[in-house]
Amino acid sequence: MTRRWLFADQLGPHFLDDPAQPVLLVESRAVFRRRAFHRQKAHLVLSALRHRAAELGEQAVFVRTETYGEAVRDLGEPLSVCHPTSRAARGLVQRLGAELLPPRGFVTAPPEFTAWAGGRRGLRMEDFYRDARRRLGILMDGAEPAGGTWNLDAENREPPPRGVTRLDVPEPPEIREDDIDAAVREDLDRWERDDGITFIGRDGPRLFPATRAEAVERLRHFVGHRLPAFGPHEDAMLAGDPFLAHSRLSAAFNLGLLDPLEAVEQAEAAYRAGRAGLASVEGFVRQLIGWRDFVWHLYWYFEPGYRRANELGASEPLPRWFAELDADAVEARCLSDVLAGVRDRGWVHHIPRLMVLGNYAMQRGWRPGAMADWFHRAFVDGYEWVMTANVVGMSQYADGGRMSTKPYAGGGAYINRMSDYCGGCRYDPKVRVGDDACPYTAGYWAFLARNEQRLAGNHRMRRPVQGLHRLADLDALVEQEQARGSRAP
Image (cartoon, rainbow, N blue to C red; front, side):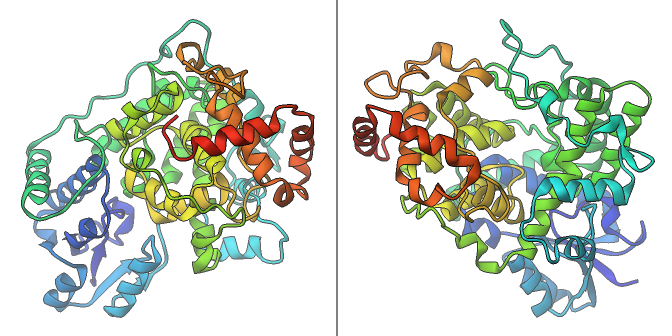
C-alpha cells in the first residue's frame, strides 16, 4: 500500500484508505520562518502533528526538518496525498511527484460544486446550502426542509440576555496538556530565542483539541449540552463570555481531526430525538455544510488573483497596534476586548471577527489582502483557504459582490444591540461627531461617504447611501475620521 503523506491539517482517520496504511508526517520549520503566526496557533498545530505521530507509532515516518521537500526526497518512496488545502501545497505535491488524490474533510465534492456553480450569474451561499441539503438529505422531511423552512437565521439573531455576564451553559471538557505539549512549548521558546523565528500573540494553555479523542469528546459534549443554547445567541457578544454556546470546534475541523459530516449527523440526530431545537441545529449545520464548504470551494473556483481583489480601492496598511495585537492601546471597549481575545486565545467567534475587526478595517480602508493574511496568522483556525473568501469577499467586500450581496458595514447601534460593550465604553454609539463619537458610528458614515459612487448601484445599499445627504454634520464627520487616520480609537 502506498505511503500516505499527511499534512498537519489532515490528521483524522478519514484521510487514510486503511487504518494500517503507512504514513509520512513532516514538521517543517520553514513554515514558521515565512510568517509570524500566533504563538498558540503554532503550539496547536505542532502538538496535533506530534500527537498523531505518537498515535501511529511505527506505522508512521515522522520527520522534523527544515522543508517538506527535504523530507520527501530523503524518504525516496512513492507517496499519495489527499488534495492539500492551499495552492502552494498543491504545487509542492505536484513538483515532488506524489500521487494527488481528491480532497477529503469536506462534504461537497469539487465536481458537485462546479456543476452547481456553472452558468450562475452570482454565487450565493444560501443557494449552495439548500442544494447541499437536498443532495445529502440533511434536515429534510422528504422533498421539504425540516420544519417547512430552509433558513432560521431570524430566530438566531437574539442579543445577549439582559443582565447576564455569561450564558448559563456547561463548560466543555477541559483540555489537559501532556509531555508532548511541554516539548512543543520548549521548542517554540528555543526557536524564538536562538533561531530568529517570531510569533504574535501570547502563549497560554492549549484551549483547543489536538487529538481525535479530544475533538470527539468536545463534539459529543457540545451536541449533548451546548447545542440547544447555541442558535438564539450565536450572533451575540458578551465581554465576560467570549465562547457563549459556540462549539469551539473550528480548529479541530480545520486540522482534520473531525469529519464535518459526523458532526452534522450527530446534530440532526439530536433534533430528531427532541434534544435540540431546529433553529440551533439548522444554524450549526449551515456553518458546516454551508459556509465552511462554500468558502473552501470558492478558494479553488475563483482565479488565483482573487486574493488581490480590491474593488473599494482600500490602500491603507494595517496599523502597528492592530497588527501586533496591542489591545491596551485601544479605548473603544468592543475593539479592545476583541483584540485582546485574539492576543490571548487566538480565537473569537464569527461576529467579533466580522462586525468588530473586519468592520473596523473596512471602514478605514485597510488593504484587504493584508487583512486576510493577518486573520490567517492570528487565528488558531486560520488557513489561506478559510480566510481568502471570508475576509477578501465577505468581510472587506473587496470583490465588489461576487460572493456577498452587500458590505457588512455597521455602526455602533449594531454593537450596542448585540453586546454589552457599549455600556462601559467612553464612546457613545449614538454620537458620530465630537470627543464622545463612537468610532464605529462615525466610521460607518465615513465609509459610505468615501464609497458612495462605488456602492450607488447596490440595491441593498441604496437607502443608507441616500441617508448620507440628510446628515448636516457630514463634512465635519469626514474631516474627523480623516484626522483619526490609523490611530487606535
